[in-house]
Image (cartoon, rainbow, N blue to C red):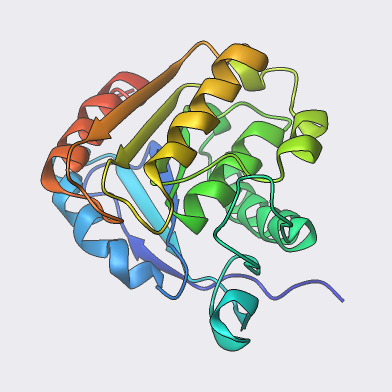
Length: 228
């Protein structure tokens, strides 16, 4: 049976719609949690429609099996090579693909779509963006990591290494440790030849997004999705 379509918060474009940003929240959150950020940036990007999907509710092992919104199960927050829910990640990636195809059907090509997310949503966005057969305008990765490392390397699309990527991470993050972001980017650049990653460190920022990061994200967006 096919997975149910994702429900989403929509922040519509204020001008003729030429571009879409699909942004996925972190564990236990909903799309509502990122509506203020979308609204904050909307005045700079009146031609952008924001799609903020809600993750399905599922048991999360690291939280004692408690059911909460999550893109995939989490077994630990230990080493970067710990066991991961690869099946869950790929199933959620397919749900993001459905959202993309709806935008395509509305006349928005992939080169005018940005895929992004925070924390677990960032990891999901990285998997989806780097395995898609069509290249996106860019990937916005906030407090994320490079998941399912060995398998993902075998699934990368031919254009993956040329992807435009914004990666922001707080140095005081204890949920997804800053070193995970550093090691992920280093692996992508040194071992997989990614050439277009903008890695921004935010001194003292915990597992969150601050005004400086959002401002930097806006500046990067102006480069990858200028008015068309």
